[in-house]
Image 1: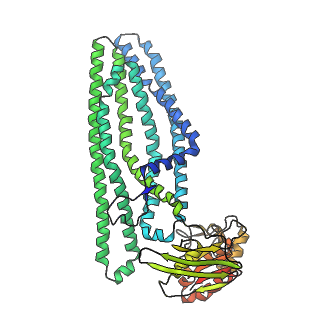
Image 2 (image 1 turned 90 degrees about the vertical axis):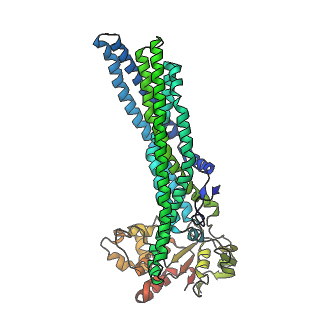
Image 3 (image 1 turned 180 degrees about the horizontal axis):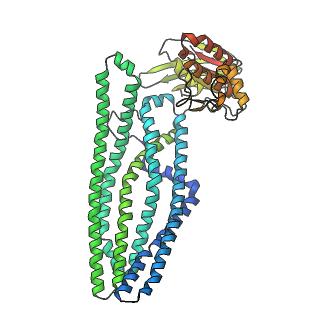
Length: 539
């Protein structure tokens, strides 16, 4: 179940959904379930490490009693040796326990990333276009980073802090239940502080993430369309829109800063109240002879040792709230699986490779681009789809390729006998992925040999320039490496098509970026890649 992201009306118009708190918790449990054993092991070891660490205060109290009673110096040997042993054992077990918790967190985070990328890649193209690249970019960068930071630092620290609090309070009760009652006087202040903070932080951090996404979207649109903006003299308008989005983000950031400052101030009050209560209780009990000075010292040290874990646990609410907001935005995308694009059905008319029956599509009310279009492609046919800009050619091509769902009608494609894709789409917007040339090509067929890659390149007449690269198939391409020109980049896309070997190919103006100089060569490459296939060609 998902909910609409909070924020201004403009912010939430077409953004991707955000999961509810209940759905986010359920998703988190599902992510952890495969690693329950590691979770129990890590928490069990941390419990043992924390329990061993609680021996420090009684041992220090014992030393105080020895000194207060005027006993010989050699009486201090055993408590000091035990303190050293406690330090060694606690250090080793804490390290192991935190390692297991950290591994659990990284595993869960990796699983979440995989699910996010899988769902994002299967989202309908028009859904992504409505949301804008800024929203998705903010989730895959800022939100993932925030959750990752919480997993690597907040999760292990929170686990250790909570265990330390529970076991320390139990140890104080064993000394004398009145010490525990005195320490608990700080709890109402801490509880009210936590409630005050959480009620405000949930909204602030959720709004902040939405505002950051809107800000990124505005910047991407302005920079990406800079030529058009200047051509229409819209610089001031876009600058103001970007400034407005930035002011909204800054305003929410400052609200979160003031919230954290108020949070810390209230925590200090709780510390003073609790410590004063424990010290007064210790004074009264020692005066009455109910406990020794060493026991009262141990109780005070116990409460003082709570400063760190209690404050850490409450302060980590800051990271937890921020991470929870980011996690809800990631889960919101993973929950879109039921609305994701499905590949076209595998039944078609006898003898037909592709059948489109009364296909309609609209990008919103009053924005119909296809109205009951029917199309049949016989096996081996090459059909050109020609029309004016905005006529719906690319929309129909994406629907046939299974990249986008129609709002009406259906598309069926004859199935292959293997698990390979039945339809492959090649557009004019070709991306060269960062990595070696071989890795780029193997995206289409991971098990392809070097000989297969060379054959595919030769088919599209790209082998000659590929062999001329400094390291051939091992040459790094894309960002930070060799950047092929548009015509050669398109040849790589066509080589991937050859490697995928689908029975049906859809080319959406795949030769448009080559320019007049390379158009003829690229058309020859496209013709070779389409040989023996059914093809729908948008021209």
